[in-house]
Image (cartoon, rainbow, N blue to C red; front, side, top):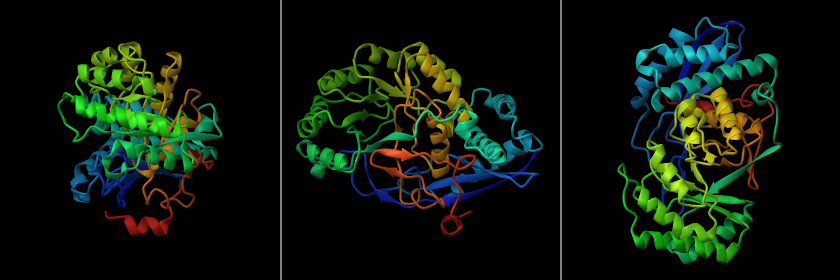
Length: 393
């Protein structure tokens, strides 16, 4: 079997009510406003699905035309390194792409997304050719269903005393874990977090614990925007409430500073969604900067890289919690890795309206768990009627 070409198209997402806790309301696009889908074709008629993450606007400030350069990069890469190759030779093809152009020897997140999208499409072909889900080709099922966490809905009036009722709502929906990010607006430069903001966050935790006790795990996200000393200060304030994790307390570019935060708190540190190679994850684990690895399969290199990172984490007694703020195909790829990882802990449950209907058999998130697709390859197939309504290019 040989790969013969690639087809790309852009899907426009549907908006949904904002989540994440705090005071922000209104609608946004979960996973981005647009999804760039690719299809690898073969000389045996098997088509492999992939998704190149676009980093597109969550609030709708971009159009599909802004992704022309990304589309071109997908086509250039496939034509240069994939066409004419056996799709079973995934490792070889991946490293041909990885090192084939000197400016990509250390892929950025942007090119890492291209590699990831192509790689997951190759795996989809292999799974369909063998009539097996991908996880069966990587060791088989470790789990019958995957635990997931929800984003906390906006707290009414932004008042911490109302956080307890939100937690009770999440429990009624079957959730066992959630995450919120109270530090807004998000900034590009590490900043000091005021005592007022810290106290506000502490009171959210306090009211949640008062309302639901230890029935709901609560993680704190910051998008890596704190200074080191502010991150430590925040950690000390919320430690008594046993947070599930402290996510990206500082920017992930400086692993040494993240390790410094980790050494000053008992709260597990979570990071990984912005790392792009196995080498970066290796450094993260070696320096004991995080215990919860949030690899993004759509950015870090794809499914096989995900399996390697999970194994590295396992050897360091760390767990994986895949980052899944993405489109539907990349989410399906992440589930394949999670299913065959013995050290999987929990997955991000981010489903907008389109995620729930784009496939003939949608990925089901219910009662705090994700049902594992059982079909061959990625285990998903687009509903052609829904797809047709949302293709813009």
